[in-house]
Structure formats: structure tokens, C-alpha cells
Length: 466
Image (cartoon, rainbow, N blue to C red; front, side):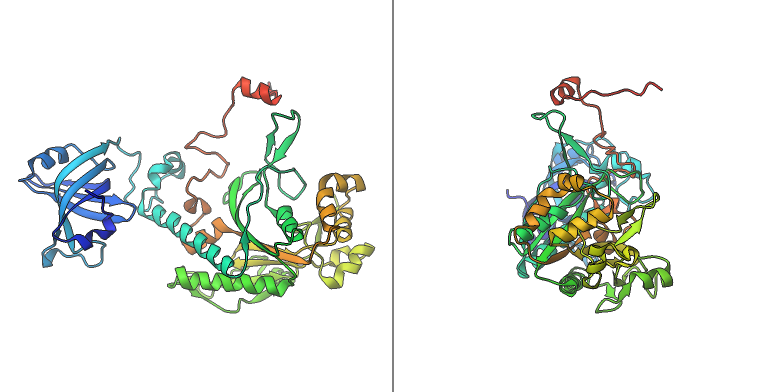
């Protein structure tokens, strides 16, 4: 008999059906045993009546989280037993046969509640069990819905989804790189991308004009509570645009996303307000201001754009470094100062951040598309000519081949989903999250590798004897 998903059982009243899934709850009442069954589509109550002797015998030994195949008849509930606010609240499954597909040990923790009272490391260690709880299922499935909404939106706007490499070259872009040793060229290393920044600019050079992807990014940063060593960006780039063009299309995307998938939420103000970096710091003491009028209302969304960021800032050693991204272009009025090396502290970047309820959810800029401007940025930061050529010669060469003006933005996808789902941290919206220390407790990673593999890579581990 064909399997029926639980959500579709109401279409089969008075018929015999087969469902497959997990035992969610078991309640033994002597002559009858009640069950709640669960599959990917929902939950359903079933009962084994006293005359179903074989099903009753199996029902006496099965326990929650066992995987079963159940054959039964879909019956209407009596009027006084109807639960109109629940899926399948008007029907019940009269169980005729239970087949055990797999037994289960007693879970390490309860999955009935939202799980927030359980130690997070315990939940992460048995994540496949934690993901069975209703809240986590909603988080991951809604993440999927957001993904497809965004894909459809950009496609309709003429963007092409293009994947960029995960094995690339280490270049100084801010955070520390994860490096991958080459077996064929011992002593040389790939780097995992901190972002697709250079690749997406090279796609503009290649003439695609409108690009996006859901990009995996990797940063070997020190322990920080709401960071992950690998995370996801919504990455997009456009050619022949100015700042207003990038802001407009992405503001449109966010507004339509909320209206379509989160109609219960209210955007506080549209168009989104604009605040300069200087105003934000003077008024709110932060470049991520929380503009909500009622911070106790979880369904209130206060978006804003922060603009006019300084291009450079001083390091602790007194040298200049970029504030956001070395590939950002100075605003047109400040390009001359950059090229002349004058008033560096006053140069403003064509940089813009998008903030939601006090969290930065994205940042972007109009990029430098001329090699002489990008070269001058690195010279301002103290890079020698040979170092610039070594690290960035490939992109300077590309810019010399005819690269159009372009700009874009990268959204922190995990953080966006977290805020829309009213979750306290991004680990709650990532299927297999790592701890704040970057550990995968479920897989026990990072872990040592065998000596044979190290030998093949030409790597020797130096033990600290202190």
C-alpha cells in the first residue's frame, strides 16, 4: 500500500492507509494504547483498540523515537473530541498493524519542548536528535523557504546564480584564513575563501553584469559567541550601478521577503531610513543602531542603512588599514585625495551596511574597478609594490582588461534567518552548528589525522613540550 504523508490523512477518511515515521508519544491505557506519530509533514494521533491483538502486542513493546510503518483506518473523531486548532484534529487513526523499521535507544534529552533549557553542548553532541524537535524543524524548513524566495527574486531581476571556488589563494582580507595543504605540490597551500569578494568582481570583468550565490565562507577567528568558522552569505554583485541602485534592489528584496514569508511581522518604516556613520556613532554610540520603537515586540522589524563610512582607520601601530574592505571605492569626491595621499582620515568609502534591530545583516560597497585606485589603496596601507603584485596581481591584471563600474552586497544569511525566526543566536538556525570555540561536538572535530596522511602532505606536527 502506498505511503500517505500525515498532513494528507484528512483526504482519506474511512479508508485504510499506510504511514511511516517516528513514534512521538506513547500512552498505554491498559486495553488501548494511544500514539502520536510524526513524519516530515506533521503529527497524527492513533489508537490500537482491544480487538487488534497483533498490533496491540507490538504496541506494548515500541517506545518513543522508534521508526515504524503503520497501517490503519482514518476515522472521524466524535464532535466532543475534535481539536480544531491542530493538524488532523478532526480525525484519528485506528491502528490495524505496526511494523518496526528501527528501534531507538532512549534519547539523551527530551525533544518535546523548545529545548532552550537544555545545555547547548548536549544538544550539539546529538544534533540529529535535537533537530527532530518542532522548533528546530521550523527553523531549518523556514531557512529553506527564505533561500528559495531569494533565489527566485534575483532570478526575476535578471541575476545569474554562479558558484565560485572553495579552494583559492590566501590573500590579506581581514580575518585569518583556513589553509588546505596541497598533496601534489608539497609546501604549498590553498585557502578557503573568507568571502567570494575577488571572484564576484572578476565575474563583473567577465561580463555577467548581475551575479548572486549562496556562498559558503570560512574565517579562522578567535572565539566569539555568535560566530561560526563556516557560515553562509547571500552574495550579489551588479555592473554599471551606483550606490542607490544596489540599495534599492536589496531593500525591495527584503520588503517582499517579509511580506511573503513573515506577514505577521511589521516593518517599522519604509523606505528604510538612512543614517551616516558619523550620525550613528554620535547619536547611538554604535554603527548598528537599534531603531525599534518597541524593543519588546518580536514582530517589529526596524531596518536602516548606515552610509558614509570612513575608508581607512589607524591600527594600534599607527598604520592605515581599511575599515571594511580594501576593494571598496572611495566616494567620487574623495578619489583625488586618495591618489594624492592627502587627508586620508577624511576619505569616505562608497560603503553601506544594512542593519536590522541592532544587528548588521549585510554590508557592501561600490568597488574600485580601476587598477590604479586599488593599487593606491594598498600603498596607503603600507604595502610594498612587490607585495601588492604577489597578492593581488591577478585582479589588477583583470581590471586592466576592461572592467565596468560595479558594486554589490553580502548578507549574513544565518543572522538574517536568526532574526526573522526570533532566535537568540545563529546556531539555532544552522543544521549542524559548531560551538563558539569552533568545535563540532557531534563529529568530534577538529581531530588528529594519521601519520600516513601527514607524510603524503609533507607535514610534520611539532609538539609543544612545555
